[in-house]
Length: 440
Image 1 (cartoon, rainbow, N blue to C red):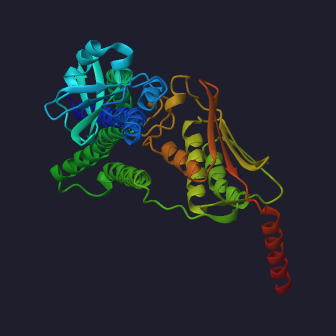
Image 2: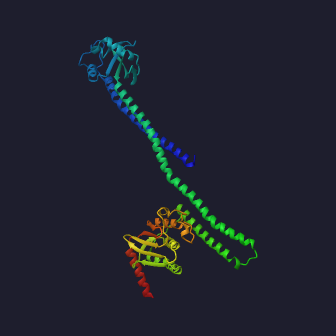
Image 3: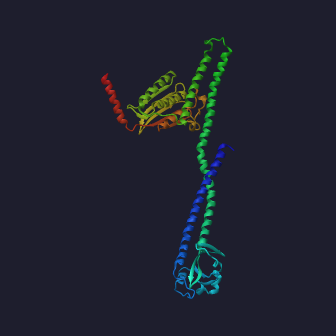
């Protein structure tokens, strides 16, 4: 079982336990609140009967419409019984309505009650709340037991309890599923980052191994021939120098991506004229294309195009795209670059008539260390340039798109947000140029 599998199980248990605990607290709160509210009304009715001044005297026959009898009729679940010191029943609220024998059978389980606080007592399948008060009737000591039938309330609470327990059982099952889903979703970005890091390290090791192996091989060859002149080893030295430069570029790109992943690579945003920089960057590539017998065309807007960005990083972005176009464009091919406005964006376009990319390759074009078929070009790359280009564009809140067709070429389109107060900046720049001309 791998690390992420174990972590997923632990997080599932933790999430499920927390959800079950919350459901239990909620269910318990509802149950005890309902119990308190339900019994509060019955206990209030019981207390009213205790405070009633109409407790019958021993020599008074309870009559309809009088005192406790009225209360009995108003609340059919409320009873009282008068008991002497020997726990013998003397009088009750049922004597007149049900008869003495029925009354004695009913009150027999309650005659030994002594608590002056409300207590619960179960008789068969019924539940009662009892309250005892001492009374002096005709000079003799008695106790009056007040009884309230709470069977209906008790059955209601039992039903509520069963519903809550059933809900907890269903909730526990749902909590396990929800806990697994939450844990899986939380681990997804971590697992992706972990796999990406492992793949990054493996790819970096592979890319570093190749130039190091070539340099080592060439050095060992030179050591075997210590008396050989430099002129005779020129080709080997050139190969080592070329691999050293490639290695230096690879390490630099790796450092850039590592810092960007750790958010330690700062991008300094400042207003600058993208058109002016675009023309400056494309100039050496135009000369290079002419030397390699490739057509190079440049289209730029007549007006300045101001963006808020890191001039050094945007310069790096253009170099990556132009170098990529030069790399995959063969002799007598064509490269077209353009810089223009499009709504609220500055639009950069780099097109080539090179070998192009297949539909399977397009989704991976910005992946690290991904390289198209090396047989299509003579120049070696690191597979990191477009990853850095994608990072630069995202840091400038822009978009980069690629269109390609195998055998016909590739077009990269970059859109970067224009400055909001671009006209004001342009006027200030023109004023500075005019002032400089007057001084000249």
